Length: 105
Image (cartoon, rainbow, N blue to C red; front, side, top):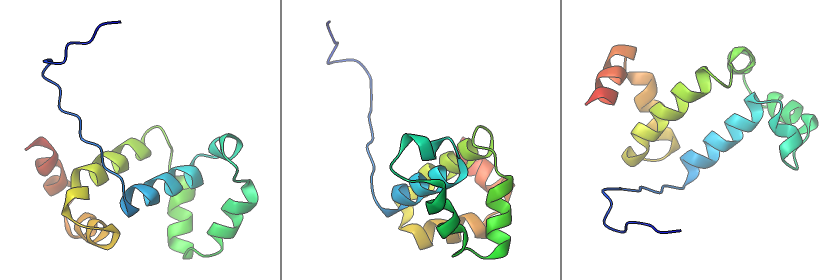
């Protein structure tokens, strides 16, 4: 196999608390993920017990294929701007139109 080392690719690798949160959120939302990890549905029940009723209800209605991709994209767009609290604050403080404009910039 041959690779062109001069190809115009730019790879950005990021890892930190925000991505740990995203991984946990994905695992919580995607019930199929329980079977792919060492976690069980008991883990999800334990986590559910620590969430506010509003957040728990919201997460129960989320769909991994639609909602997840939007959340992941928005968070990736904002991860260079701080940790978990800062990213959540930015998401909560901006309108959908402002986030869309930022994504298109």
